[in-house]
Length: 382
Image (cartoon, rainbow, N blue to C red; front, side, top):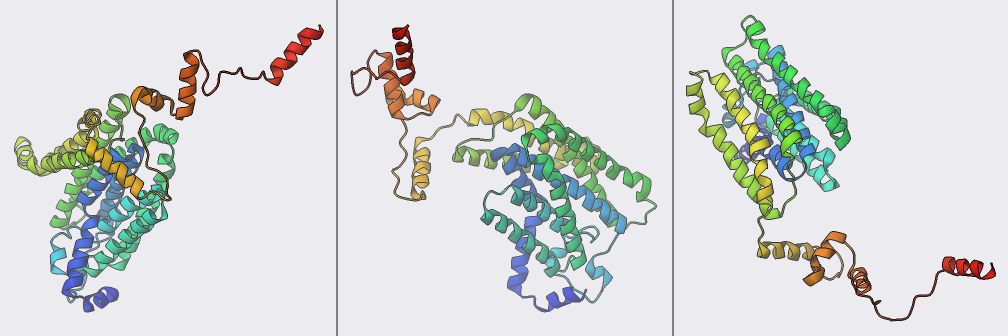
């Protein structure tokens, strides 16, 4: 608490605004956008990795909150005052920090697959800023933050060998999905078995139950998506840059529409049971993100825009090192052949002329090789 009071003494309106903005990076929506964008546009295996670390980490985090039942800092010490704008979103127990563990798992997973050191430094900087923002805003103690960072690092390291290669991913992913579903079942069973007798605050208990049914919908959806995609859909993530933008913009728009637009209808269908309605809502979000929308990617890949393609080629050549000439696409009769064989134009011309009965550049006969000369000499002396 002494460190939090020290941070309380250096607060300014600008820093309050800045860290209130930074802390949103650890929110559920940011995790969803980043994980789905990787899954759709970069690499499915890396997307599954980020999603798995996030889902398992959230369940572990919520179970620890319910087990330790540590109150928020302003409840432990009535003289301490957090930033008012952060109190409304700080629901549930304090230990460990959910936002910190979320950002640590998400960007820690991305950092392991980053191919350049600048990407890893950027991921580390985001993790540090979000972790510090939770303490600056006064919603978590240093112990909450450090333990959540340790849990995130342990999950990132534990799942990395499974998702490191395609072979290990295909072998172990079914077991990962089964383990996640078992953990989710234990999480849900906690409330009817121990919830009433554990002496939980009603507000914290409600927050834990919402998280449990949210994770149930996401975990069941992840199992369905993995089975259907690996068996039937098998979508490809590669596309032009403007098609990637279409995939992200339209897909995320529909997902957010399901998240907010189906809230009231599903609660009505479920006869007021907000927890079951929440589970179904997140289940539909995951199924759309993993099955329905990816089924459209092969049709979106057919979209072509020559001006945008030329712009991408110009930008690529603009940042290319050296004075190398711009790339030129093959045209004419050799275009399809060049794309298929990936060979240089000289080889293509020689093969074409050879098929027509002549040789390029000269009509002289090629000199026989030493093997053919040796064969002729052996026959001569026989």
